[in-house]
Image (tube, rainbow, N blue to C red):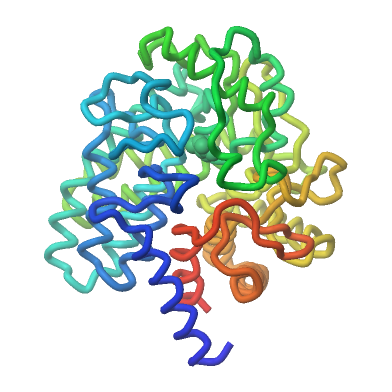
Length: 425
Ligand code: DGY
């Protein structure tokens, strides 16, 4: 790509970000996702920082204004009424002053805030705003290890597939089958009115998503009870890796801002988690796997979630093995990184997290590979991501075999990642 094409792409990406900007928060895309989503917002802020640092800080501050008293940061904040999305506040019934969902999402904030702080041109304002966010992010991390690792094993569990962000991954299939489908109040999906149903989760999966929501609602969203009461408790390697990375980044940031105790706590959380993560490594797959906490067994499913730990400071040898695994996947797909191994018969190139490639995931993997010295594979991922944009625009996700754009269009975090990739290229 020449400089002019680069500039063009930057302009287009900024246009998408601004189009979805609602002043103090950004929607992932019009129609399909009309509210603020937790990890979307943190990635979005990185893109906004490219053209408006103050606006980028606001994005994350708005999210944390809706942090729960126990420390959890919810996965959706329903800032406005919009019946175009299901399930809305009347289904969640979390009783928060501004309605929110009752579950969380990957803990990207620590990573994003450190990155915003490091890049800031307005150093003074960045220090003030980062310092104010520090204890809030720390409280979220504490919540994770208290509430989602009640036995102190070092790794946290998700209790709903939506928490992982990889809603319908093949990783969840076996454990999700334990979640009942009966007794779910009648409902009408909205997502399939905005996106092709063949690219979205199935009706049976939605029944189970809803069953879990109803179950947790019946327990009054009391996080001291939800983990143990959930029939779905999964230790997701990717989810934990993001949390570990955020602990490490928050620790560095805290040191810089003169908060050594907060730094030490987060460093200890990360060290314990990195040691525990190794039990999820699978030599035959050349990647990490998820653990089903209720059966105590590793889940035989080679998804991208098991490649994401390279985003955390894992051992060099593990990062190198992940790079080799990605090279193998690249031989089977035109675009990388597919969200599931194309060699697995369960792979589905078009259905959400069962095959398609996602730019935020590519970004985290490329970032980790670069830090581990695997620069060639990282550059391939960056190149493939930009090729997808050029060929198919700012989609939610892409068919890794054909490059076809899938899901929602003019997608915020995809645009944000393009700005990040161009910065790195
Ligand atoms: C959805 O509605 O598809 C979301 O992924 C849930 O957060």
